[in-house]
Length: 342
Image (cartoon, rainbow, N blue to C red):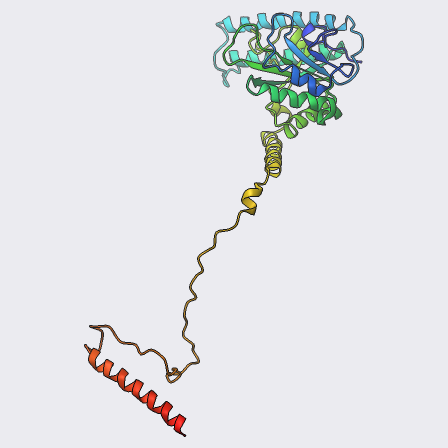
């Protein structure tokens, strides 16, 4: 069975108020609400807030210390060799296809790649393969991200993965502009690619989290970070070594699309607006159309006679038109009298 790091930073603390386990007296929801990383300041005694979903790991053995000692010696040798390459004037800055000579950069990268392989061998030989996914979050977002991860670990999507423990850094003792809280989601074996990818997909698809790679606990115990003078990569896995960028983006986009849909569905309906009386609309006047089946003689007795305007074709015949109207009315009247007398 693998043994996790003996380093206190990677060991779930006992009798510590800022650590939750199934044996805790409060619910996980109350715990994350009470102990928010943006509000808990480290005074030297509370650097982390922890959550563990299952029983504690098995008793620690000396394997972790033996692995760390061996890895530290290796890292020291690599650091010295990288420095030698840097200061060796006989090594060209650029490689030469003609002579086959490698550049300083190529030689350094070869040393660093070899060291990564040897560190893996040391980890596996001593059963010291625990590690964590790294997540960085600013103080204005860390509470929401941490609550999401902690609840998921205990009873959500993460609970069905290999991970069992997570932690988040509290506020530093002294004010630090632009401070980023680190969140660690632990994995039993960082070299088990399938297990690592499983956790990765959940963090992306179900939480929309930006990930910063997978780090071995062994790396933490020997002080291997991104600024180490050896130049050895400080993570076992980079994101794109596990999934292509396109798939990472697709998983995150799916999460945010689902989140947006849920917000829209949960938006309350304004009943006042829905039940408000509608303003009467202006009725469009029905356009008058010519009847294609009518004749020129289908005019009623009371049809109005159209008088062309002054200046229209035909000249000024207003007087003549008035006389025609008068004659027409007289003719209509005479016709009606004739009908009555008959």
